[in-house]
Picture: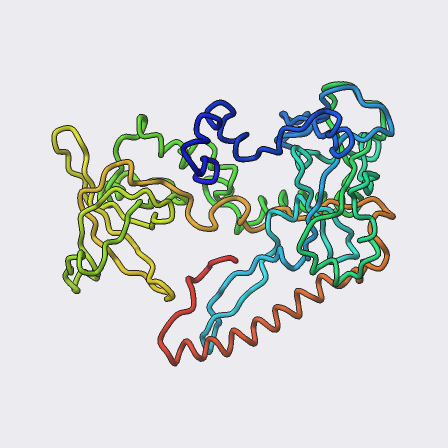
Length: 419
């Protein structure tokens, strides 16, 4: 917000007239002639509800587009496949200690483009391009090509694979080109490739089979999964103070709990040591203090609501707040009193969102043949071998760390966390 405001009072009238966004970016307003020479049209598509069942949202043409015309252009970020790995810290059996187990890939992989024989991925980030859904060979009406625009750095395609992995800036551009005549309102569909289609088909078959397995079914049907959260209150719902003016205390939640995947955080500015009243060590509390208004968005910590007291129509809460110790993997418990309702926020528990769920579909979108330079194809088995090597390396490190942890009596992280 501060960066959008003028640096001196003399510029305030101009900022008010232009608007702070335009004032903070004076070169954002360009004449049409400059845009035609230096820019690219990216308003040919708009997002909307997809015509494909259960596909969510899609990208739609805003005007008629002829076969062979560029629908939109997007810069891409180059990524290394292993940068999207998800690891989970687990307790080692037998001799103890922590080991890192490979659990899959981040959600971002589903929006990256690549080749099954390459460890290099491309993530496009122009408006709306990531809404383009898969269409079969017959239904697809668009395809990816390297851009023909002059500011596409085509010479980078001669760069080595390692050189591209180390590239810390963007310069490559994709053109999304129409392969059929399109009318306004047509959904833009890309053929994601044979590998993607086969992976999706296998995923659906395995998912359906898992619903019939004995360990996936109880007396009331399949175990709870993400789709069954529909109908449960969300964090957005619970944070609407006009609809939820009170927060249930720890005792009240024994009878009327919030959904398992939701927790509370409190906005709290920890006091200086001399301002902190020492609490009873028997209660495990480091500090006892009165709540003060905090505007620092970073000062919001996990908390447990202990009591709620109404005074002249206003609810005041006391809470046990978990404040992390700087440069240490530990927290201190603060008893905070006279906290207002707007200091309490409902959030999803770490790693409870659907992008962290086990068994979900993760697969990059396939690039058409001939797009990926041959010298960037480092082998179809590279990914699996790379994962195995890393798992072995992490396990070896985990054994050493585990031994050190056992000797020191300290833990290196929460069990079950994904990184």
